[in-house]
Length: 569
Image 1 (cartoon, rainbow, N blue to C red):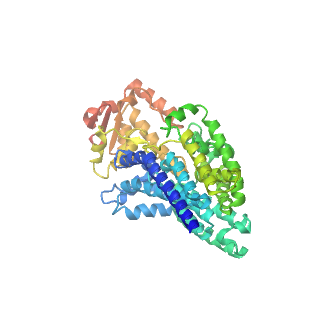
Image 2: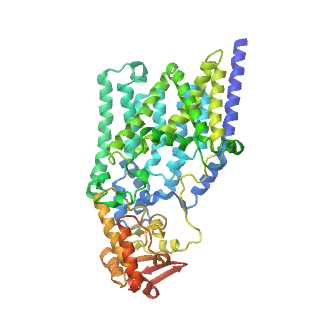
Image 3: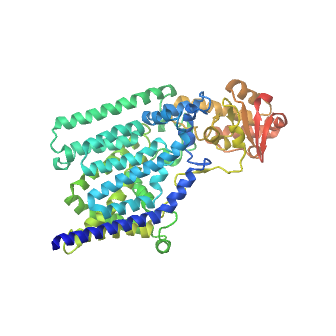
């Protein structure tokens, strides 16, 4: 009777701690998340990549744009089939814009669910709560999901895959791989490599529900999963064929758009960092939050020494993982995810660009591993060091101390702007004017300016935008080059012939003109930079034709912006 009473008291204490911790999570991270949700309701606030991957679906809505759009066709072709089917099927009844803003919160819940279940399986409820706190304090997870893009599926699928590994649920992991292939193939590759490691590298006792499976049964499962992955990839490969071959690092000489002075940033082209350098960068991204600190006074004390604190925490992770993995088969299985990320990074680095960007393999595994295993390793290390060894109180204390150290010394409160990279000024009226034009208009303007927001925010076709001017496939790149050459000639020529060619050859109906473009040559990447300077200098010397037609062709003026109607020429 006394033993039963003690168990009840212990249960009440644990539930009280869990309830208090849950309330603490809500108080600490709820307000920034609520502010983030408010931003989602503002149509002028969005992630910049929706201007690539969401605007093509507007053609399927009731109030959609004209369907003939080369950039929209291209981005639809390179989308994973499940992602494309989801948005296309729902577009007639659920507009892609609110859908893309709602999905990230569902994905965040799924990611937290996977993290929580994996951590609970390893070291119980307190470790799970600390893992959830570590996931909520960083904007990294939510920022990758905002926009409702294909990559938004990566973290929830990888987090659920980590839980399946920890729980030994081999069939659940196999099912997640197939789903991932339909929505984001990088996640499928990571989970597929993890499944292979679990079935054929891990010791028999570590294989979970596949422990008693024969070599043949394991092989059959892997073959079935691989066949389904290929079946889902084939439609995507066929859709990409009309756009030419993929462009790799060796093509930069002929196609400078993909070179050092081209469209892609240094992180998206070779040489890629060494594996350990990339792993360290991913650890810093999830642990050393640069925004509003959770405990500002303490963060101020360690400012400039964050790397030392992080090294100490990583040392605790390493020291604690050894007894954790020795004692807990679930922890050993989880290593398959980290191994998969490392192998995927090395392969993608060696075979760029055919396996996507290498950093994504580490970027979707290292953060999950850290938030789950830091508290769990702290618990394991405390269990070893406590005099009575592996007591519940010691392990709970260890999880709280390590997780709390991250939160106090390095942690933040989340970011109400996580993932939102574009905020259009509410007083900019040109967007509303363009949105009121007929659906079949084709608007041109200098890429990187107002024109980049026209396909998504105004739902009207754009001639060429910086956002969609990507050097991934040869035929698409050459068409964008042809269009950019025509735009340069039209804007900076001394006569109207370039504007007339835009209208008669390409079907451009309107042109956005910014006065700043004629005070100095506007920037653009190679190989256009040289021709821009030459064309601008010729126009400046002889007079820009665009400036001469403003009076008769302008249909809208706002500050330095003018919208020309080419039918008036």
